[in-house]
Length: 145
Image 1: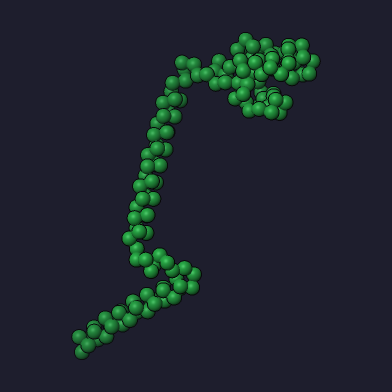
Image 2 (image 1 turned 90 degrees about the vertical axis):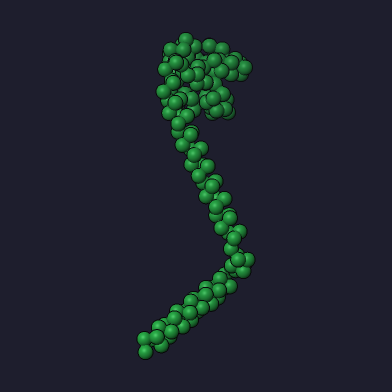
């Protein structure tokens, strides 16, 4: 069984709990107590929550996952999943570096603009484009005549 409860019994002993007190205070049922001691069973989430509340701890403070030999397939899947995550992280880091270079290469006056200045800058650029396209249109009209 991959879940081991050795830490539970150390925690109980450190807090002054013996078998009699565990049963009298209804901390663990007799079946649960026997099954966890023998390694033949576990406990439900309500019992886990109760232990966490009483001892102000996390589940890993009293139970431990120890994989047995049949766990090799999920480990391989986890490794390939980690590789996919690492590749995605590397891709994102490259994209961030590209964007930083792009910002660094922009003209300083573009970067400094904010709020009203951005609107004014956009209007000026738009007017410049319209002026140059109007000049192109005038040139085309003269050529056609």
